[in-house]
Image (cartoon, rainbow, N blue to C red):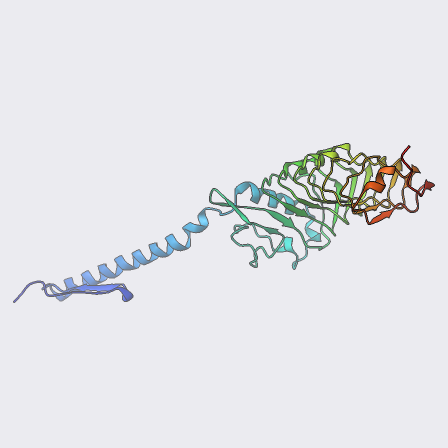
Length: 303
């Protein structure tokens, strides 16, 4: 009996046949058309799943721009092939490619906001990078750690670092920064650790540092810091202060932070007597005031 006979379907082969009482030529034409249809469908499927996901970046565009600015601020001849910056390839999405051969290291993306990854940490390796931070907008609102220590960055520390309102750690140690410490750093109310030591910084410690209410550790030693040490009594969490090897002058503050465990102020130009308030620092273990102007090395009794 002539009529439709069977419908054969094999999903694994993406192939099917429909057997009708057509001529052999018509049957071949149908098979060819069917094959072309499934080949086109397969190519479309590969395009959708392989290409479209890369069309939209997984990293917020502003964060990508800030990372580009950082790399562009470094002299290319100081970027070695095996360094973090040497691997940054912005033809790929940074957060999506992190810890791959395209972005081996240098930052982290530990937060997703509105479906987009945000940069939360920038920590460069000690690779001898030469450059400046002055042309960077620092528009990284979710950044918590910025550490560029042990490199050769120079110029002024930009006041735009105050844009990093969630920053808890700022490490610029052992570079070649010069000029004064920007007063705007005092607005970083979440900052817990500040490392500015071993640079060529000048001028006084800004009085705005009194606004660093979360600060626990301040290292500003081995610079050319001058003027008097400001009153830091409002820093209730500060336990470590090192301002050694500078040209700080004048008298010691009369109201030091009560949480201090260590104070190092050696090799400065401090004068006068040690304030009696120091003997009420219950947690103090180290007090180093050696190599200053003559000091009365005994605590003054309350009058």
